[in-house]
Amino acid sequence: MHLKWSMKDTYKIDLLSSQLKGRTFEYKIGDGFFADIDGLIKHGKIHTKVECLNAGVVFKFLIHSIGTVVVPCDRCLADLELRIETADTLSVKLGDEYADEGDCVVVPEAEGYIDLAQFIYEFIVLAMPIACCHEPGKCDDTMMHELSRHQSARSGSEDGEMMDLNHSEDPNDELSGGEDSVEPVDSRWAALKQLKDKLKK
Image 1 (cartoon, helix red, strand yellow):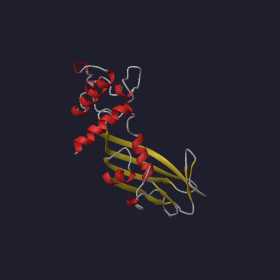
Image 2 (cartoon, rainbow, N blue to C red):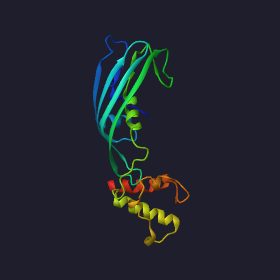
Image 3 (tube, rainbow, N blue to C red):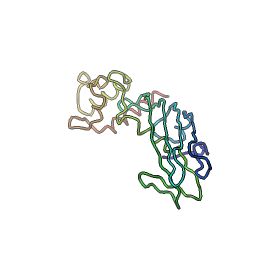
Image 4 (cartoon, rainbow, N blue to C red):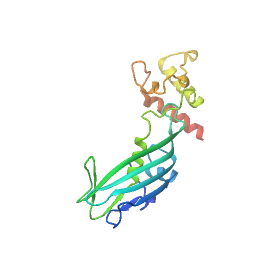
């Protein structure tokens, strides 16, 4: 994950500060945050509250985020709004150099701070469902028609036999990659993305 410099020191917490235990930090996260990280999430409105539960040898933070994010639908690539609520703990301790010990993050004592931006983002992503799809029948009609046409062309079907993916019973059907799949999902995404880029022009 790449963080741009525009975030500056917004999400940095000084671990060497006195009276850190019990302090609360609040952030209103918007599109700028997600643009700086340049990940899967493109838009969102999230309120994040960070509480320092313990300070000393090990610092423990409770990170609670609630709001909405917008991501591409896994099926049609159109925008999909998801409700997010997550509460996670992050343990941090000071050491000689950066390290991830699994249940604890080590940051250099010479720097003395923890940048929470990447952790806040990762906790939000982990709160998202594995398959991010519109409900059956709610996908973008133009995109779904293009996907059906593309699948039919690849399988040699006639137009009248094209599968209506927009009314699939299971939102994960197209992602299963089972024996009945016409082709890997990546190929279909490429075709849909080309169509989406054309529609934006």
